[in-house]
Image 1 (cartoon, rainbow, N blue to C red):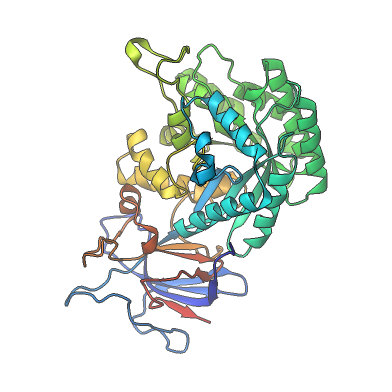
Image 2 (cartoon, helix red, strand yellow; image 1 turned 180 degrees about the horizontal axis):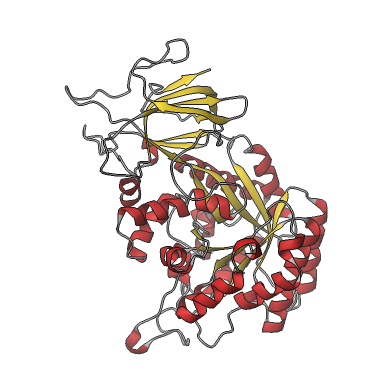
Length: 490
């Protein structure tokens, strides 16, 4: 599967809505000019109703409108980001040959076992096909940057990693892929720990395409091995100038020691702030154990991360579609997580609250698609933001805007690729844009335009309504229902 075709460089994008900080103000539209040499937004000006014919090619809209009903101008927002997604394990369930790998109990142990079985049958063509499918689904949703995990261990050696590198190179024009060499299996315990560590070490020496060192301390056989795992990953990241990313504290056991405290201590002791170069960052994912924290522990966490120039560059990524499915015992299970009367605790980081109340840097990620860890959901981050409205009881317009940031600009910043807070596109920024068009998705001659971020998050439009601009070039599809009416090509 080849990457999608891109248009010639775009010179202008005409008559678009931008995110409006004041929903009660009079709606206005703007014209965007793109510097195709720098792939950045050169200017943003109030819409001129008469664009220059020398730079604009207009086509007839693909579907007629009823008399007197004009199409709404498209809403233009920053593109989406996957801060945490597993490239090699995507869509395992989609193969008719893998029905024996479907979950039966839904436990974490079962998911590990089924995934290990699946990994034994991985081939390069299979990995390439499923990885390409994930990238295509992501790009069509509006994702232009992602942190992608590829496992390295005694089962797959470097096979998944080398395929991921091939995909990273093939899709470089359309996606910024930040590649994680990831240890899902133990590094300091069990009979395979040493060989797993040696394989990961050799991969880090051989492949400069690796951007991030990832590990899973909680799969180690004991707490001391988990701490050795953390120390090793931080030390190697500092030595090799990489980001570090931990799957951490994936439990809801109040008796389990939260390893986040050890991570923060190890970062201080190894001098991360003074030694890490080029804005290298630390990400911790899942962290469901932290949902049992009270105010005092959250406040302590904020203090230990620090503030100002002493602040550690630590971000948290909540993975609600996986966490809500996996971070609880199955029915009939014997676990300390099971409540009385058959009730079972579930947990995922309360993203909006942690940002607003405690000042933490928290984003949201899809994590897995189509495997035993997450057999439900899609690769579209907007569906995750929509889920967050219900999970976090976050129903205001401001909540919706924050949730969009957490799968867009904030997520991009958390993985060290720029970005930050806010949803209004700015001059000088890279021209990665997601346009939401007024399209009849129903086929009944009725459309439902999204005029605000809240409307996009509350009821995400289908991919057919989305146009993705990557570095100032439009992703082409087999059928673009909006035509080229707003795009002027150089």
